[in-house]
Image (cartoon, rainbow, N blue to C red; front, side, top):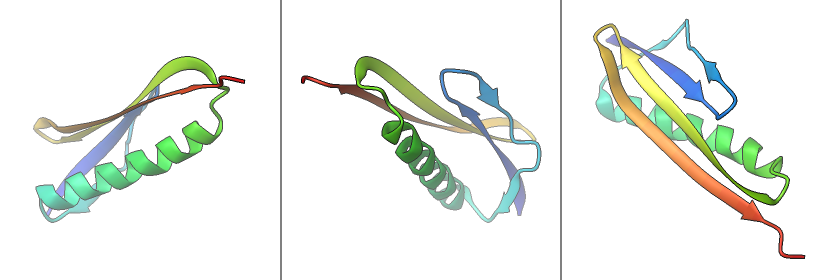
Length: 81
C-alpha cells in the first residue's frame, strides 16, 4: 500500500499533513478526500457569517511522487434578511 498525504487549503492558510495514511488504491484515496472535505465544509458552513463571501476549501492529496488528487468545495451564504 502507498502512503498518501492530505493537505488542506482553507483560504486562511495551508495545513500540511505530515503523517499521511496508507490506502489500497485511488478509489480509497478519492473516498477519503471526499469524506474529509465534507467534514471540513460542514464545520465551515456552520460558522459562516452570511456576508456573501465566497469560500473555497481544497484538499490536495499527494504521495511520494507528487500530487494525485485535488478536491474542491466552494460555497457562499448570503443573508437576505
